[in-house]
Image 1 (tube, rainbow, N blue to C red):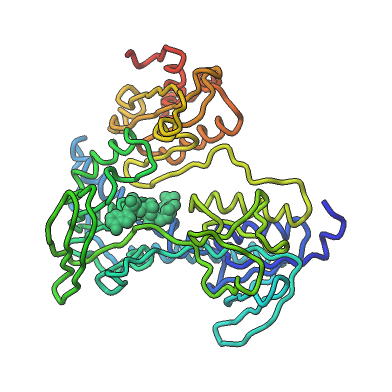
Image 2 (tube, rainbow, N blue to C red):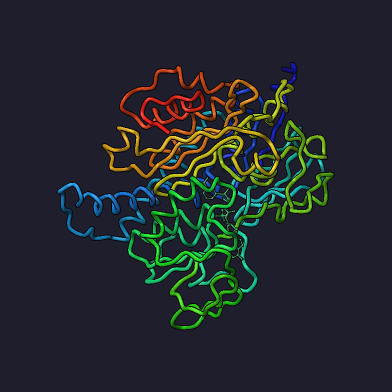
Length: 469
Ligand code: NAD
């Protein structure tokens, strides 16, 4: 670390899961830190309008579904009565608790938190404008852009009372009778399941041949089987060609595999997000962006302007909170003059539906596309004692290994409840360069779903205790 670290002033713009860890780490490394965000406390989209509120609602959805499914076990629960105001208040309380906690952590670190919007004047100076319009100028030794991303809106379906995006869908204004999800990705499926559990008839339209493009098909199949029961319809290889919002609903014209015109109470547009550099004044700096609007960064997350760094959604795919956090810590260390690099071997992806879908490292589809020879082993949860006790035999655990390199683990994929927690073991295995035998010869607790990773690894060696091919 350089000796003059203590005197360095670092400004972090955006206090989401990229910005606040960067600010906290920079403060812990001894630097003077200013953190700027439009919200009263750190948290960003993840805490205010994304991961945290959606997971709170998904927990409620899972309870509603389990209450129905437990009838098969001889336990009958009367139909849940949903108090939407109380559910919304619960979600808002979770947000307030977590963002308030981050505010405290920021104060404890003596970070100067400014509520406002930052605009670069040049590569060393920026202006912060508060909610009251008052502006102040700051100079910095280093700045970190962590401004995240915004939902993409379809030009022919601008946001309205009937046309929601992820933010307004989380407001939970009401439970529409019928809801069309435009886009069968992370947001569409997670929030679609929430609304289906609360009582909406949910339809999804996805332009690709499968839901969740990017995830391996055998994992998606497990989720699709459940969604087919919960959703009204799933239209693949279909696009929305036109939308007409009227007093009684939104008339939607589909084109592709499902040619039809249908009316829905509401639409949720979830067709991806775009990097947010709006109003940042990048044109006053040497920071360059690529053709998709992502800020160009090097392995230490430094932009093309030497004192300015960028992390998180604004700095490239995947747009995931945990990837942003990792980058934030790298940028803070780079500014402190430490030897550091953004070089993860695997980034876990989790879709928090029921069943959860989680994967990390190489997917089977990516291996095929690259013409890379891999061995894929799969352990069906029907053969797992723990899954059977939970009544969840529908899951699967898959391992993608390199047969030419001692079955080195290249990718792990899982579908089933808790997959999002279990995938951490797979990520660690890839990060540590483990081979399948390392997983097969690690004693896993019984009876747990984690044993499915051990058994999939045993299969790579040609033998799994509970699964005979
Ligand atoms: P996404 O990229 O996950 O899914 C968008 C889907 O919309 C894709 O399947 C795409 O093929 C489809 N699509 C695009 N245009 C379409 C059209 N005109 N008609 C029909 N389908 C269309 O994007 P998202 O769900 O909006 O989520 C945005 C980002 O937020 C994701 O990249 C994800 O990284 C992040 N996110 C992550 C989580 C999580 O980690 N659990 C949860 C929510 C969001």
